[in-house]
Length: 318
Image (cartoon, rainbow, N blue to C red; front, side, top):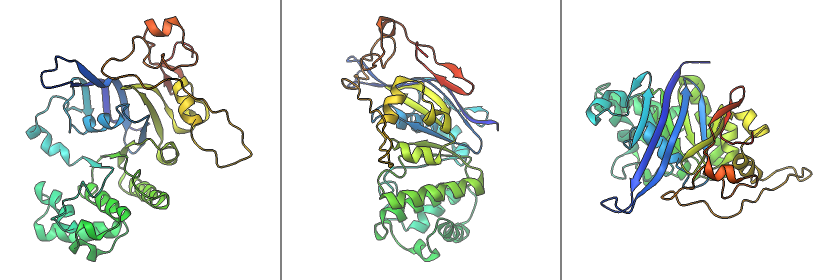
């Protein structure tokens, strides 16, 4: 396996409730450990509010961690100032869910793509604009699109523009946060294929955050499943989808529609609601909804351990 590009250990992010935090904290990310290798795609899946997008923002240092270590390309970046992070920014980029919100409506798309090259001192404006036109062609748009504004494009085209901007500095890692969830199904496939082609060409690594299990299965090499701010299972794509170990992962995968009507698959319906992240349950965070939970689950937090070669999960009964 290639060298680790991103290493996250014991990562926590607590958001205060109210201005003075006397009301407590929302534990958005609570003791997460992840590794992203060079040239691979790691998918992070889970229900809305599980903390997967927060992990992506912490990996980019768009948020400051409450606790834990973030190492990027062998360098600890968790405690770096924004000034110290600036030269590293070129190697870590992001593609957000809403491409219209992430593009300046007053900038032409050519200027938006060229700007990182100028800020990082790579090119003059003239050279950067020329490269922006080339990047637009790389993502399937015409060079003439550089003169237009974001509102003149469709959602799928705007996401291509966002990808062009993300790859302008030839980064080592791109965090794709729900990058295709706002697009039509046919456009989703086009964007996923584009990202796959760019990965082969540029050897870029993706941290792919999504709630769409079908998309994650299509694009990922490995998958991490999150629940209530914690990773409950990590495995290779095929191993996780074909042989899930954690009860939550099994329930999550059972919710994916089966295109073959002749295939009968048991639907696992979880009881109750996702607990409040400000007051998470004791022991295993999943135990209030788990169909196999016992008193031990409520009292003792399960260890996140290797249950099969390369397959990790946190459950007392695996």
